[in-house]
Image 1: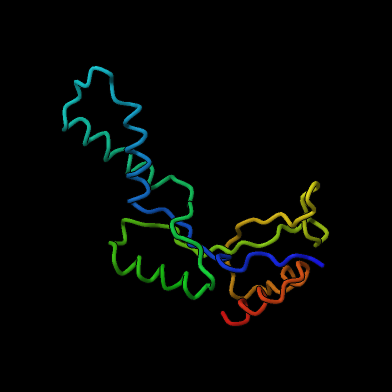
Image 2: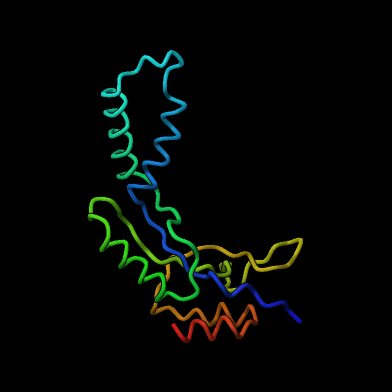
Length: 149
């Protein structure tokens, strides 16, 4: 008998936000600052803004939310984010789903040692039938969550 996979948290929101970029640049500039500390606030601010804008344009989307049980919860998170922040402060917002990796023949990839399915985050497509992946895992509760969504 197979153990059921974790149901809670199979959806999340990925994207790039200004807040995330500022956190990354703050850490980066702490390393970049000269040891003498003779950097003027104007130069620091200019360098900071330059790095943030470059990162906001070129950064790969990352997880920006906690994990959700349903795609509807993730959609609501995106709506709240769009209403509460200006459009220039985020980009590439999308819902991701944690599913088993599939090999070229359509089977599920499994860990060679534990034989558990290899899970990966993929962009969520509401039109795609995820039940084939879930059926192969043998977990009915996940199927029920996807039907409810």
